[in-house]
Length: 173
Figure 1: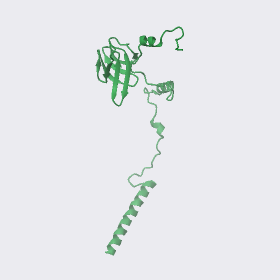
Figure 2: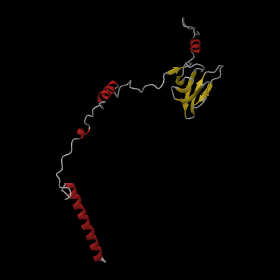
Figure 3: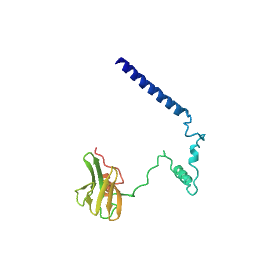
Figure 4: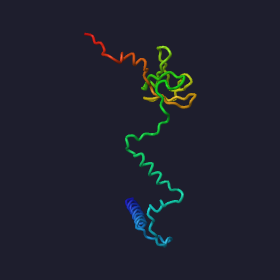
């Protein structure tokens, strides 16, 4: 048995040395007999990106990139719609608040009476459907297409809360 194990190890070692020799030969670039033509050096990668007539968009792309630098503080995507504040949409009450949290997303509209109207995403108010609620705006779809609404304060209530515009406020003594 020891004689069989020794010849098996010798056979595996011989196969390993043979494979290592083939790998070395392939990596060294020696011709393999079937391809005896000398190899030409490869063209540089820039030659592959040669100018194609009629397809030269590069100057326009460069002008677009330079007009809006990547790390400019005012670089923002184009707005999807013009946001409307408060009661800018006909037939829709004024948007007073937006609630976003783990409990869900809700938009609060001022009702005709003192009771607010709370609408969740997917809900309807008047002729509009609330499609999305974000922290600062509500997206609606209605008779005039897609709209974006932002909350606003009631100007009449704000004027009453601040008191008269002229004169000093009376302080208790």
